[in-house]
Image 1 (spheres, rainbow, N blue to C red):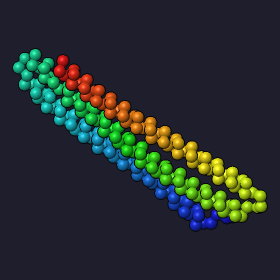
Image 2 (cartoon, helix red, strand yellow):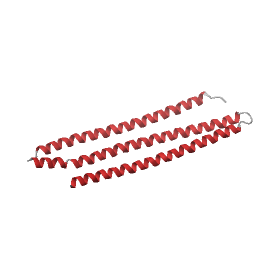
Image 3 (spheres, rainbow, N blue to C red):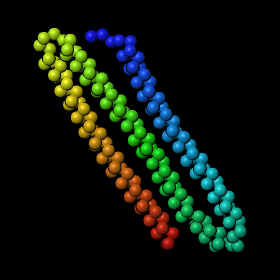
Length: 180
């Protein structure tokens, strides 16, 4: 059994496509983070200017401190929204990376199974036990990978639920603090 130039070319193309897909996904995530940060920075600057103008119009110290306190709630809500947006971008990027990795692993498994089948056809008599053992080993590895993927997805779901709960707690805390 020999490796043909066409097989090498196909393998190289698949590897380059995988690297480009990862790079593209990474660039898209960086772009999302840059846009998010630019928007937050612009909003923070505009809010600071508006707050400064409002504070400059305060008639006495009591009004000044009351105005300052009133700026806290919107700032907390914006910080929570920013954190949630960052988390969403990170989660989406992680999901894209996972899909790409799963595809590469599936392709590798298919190629390895094909290689084993070809090797079995050209192998000497009595080597079918070794080929069967390799196929069982590949199946066990795939099962282990599937289980790890399921556990990782469950951990992600738990983390998302915890982030949502923490966000709600922070919002409620800010509301209670404002009311007090």
